[in-house]
Image (tube, rainbow, N blue to C red; front, side, top):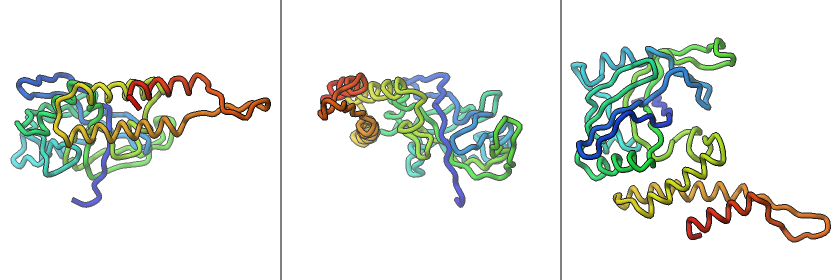
Length: 233
């Protein structure tokens, strides 16, 4: 597989049944400009689904765990475009990482999907008010459930606000304290949490007055200390 690109999207889950192992949602969203200045247009998946999707004569589009081709999560039963994006329905396999993925969806830890694809047809387009690369056709190799993204649009830098980042930290802390995942999955969650903590620490402000060279705390530092107490740091 040459020239494979990866693009992440906020995980939009329509339905999840942990007992039966069925998950439905979206791998991709149309008309959404990402940080790379790319936007996938409606119809981009039509040909690849017809040729390689679940209902084709040669199904080859995989549903993976963390882009790992050695860890297929389960079987894609439905893959189609609708007005929102690339819709899927899948049945999870009874594997440790399949079970973990279901729990992570349920617990709000998995918040992104990522697709692995090759661009077949694209064109620069300024109709949306800025110069973008509009992608009109792709060859889709896989859709992955990811705990954090592999490109610049990740939970480390992709938050719209400090509040969103704080909510993510709380979710990860809760998952570590109460989750029942495999050791490897716990490791992935801890890795993301440590990255977020490192980012928060790097943003710690220091206020120094002319009268006193000792650092003084502002409200942001107080908030950071509260998070450290939450994390037992």
